[in-house]
Length: 162
Length: 162
Image 1 (cartoon, rainbow over the protein chains, first blue to last red):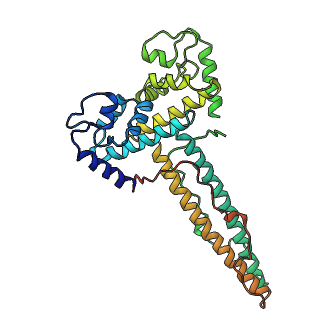
Image 2 (tube, rainbow over the protein chains, first blue to last red):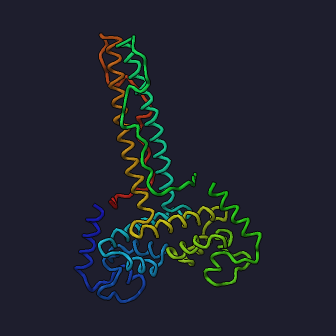
Image 3 (tube, rainbow over the protein chains, first blue to last red):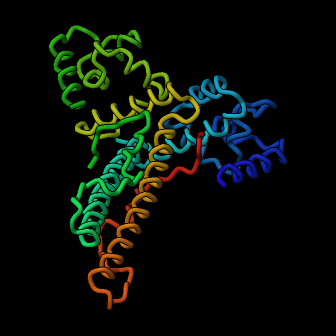
């Protein structure tokens, strides 16, 4: 959806080749054909470049884009814009604050899931006793694949901003 | 734990006031008293500044630090170092890739939790029928507070890098 919007904006930008892209307008320079910023910073969205420029600097973004395959540049610019916006909203933690929130949410959900699975095993054992009083409760009656621990990804962040 | 390590490093740095901090050494300038980088970029960890410099630029980091209260600067530098390292490892998605992984993990855990709660309600209803065959199963016999939906935080990221 976001990708589609960006594509539409890019198309809109391309339909006015004489209009400089938001980056060249911001940097007050001529937007030449083949400008590395032009496809990703349409003139209709000046804030996107302003944010990215303020946090990363135009030169760093330009270098980064030149090191990335063309088909991945739009995603790269959008992730930079996301990081820049998060850093402007929260200068101390930036989007690492979101990582911290999500990591705590994962831990809380895992704890809830463990508790619910324990309840389920208890119910299952009770039901076994009611239906078959002579059987012993093993506590492992329910082999629910949902109790498998989740994969935590490659990144970790141990700070707690709150 | 990480905070303690940083503090130890900072202490180590302070114990050699003549040694320039990693930032000043990298930028080949004199590390004067009151250097904004010195407390957070000890000479023992040159990579930390090199990464942050490559992604954000020394000037942007210096501006950012001057806009932040001194007691929050260490956290700010460490979150910048985390973002920089993530961007160097994954130039396209940076730490936004971690956000994407965590968001998918939250959704998966929530789905697992919903399924386990549904199992628990079914077990509870069955047990009611066995113990009290005349009672009707409401499906709401179990009022488990764990079924409450989680808070999803302020940030969202809709890209799927895979």
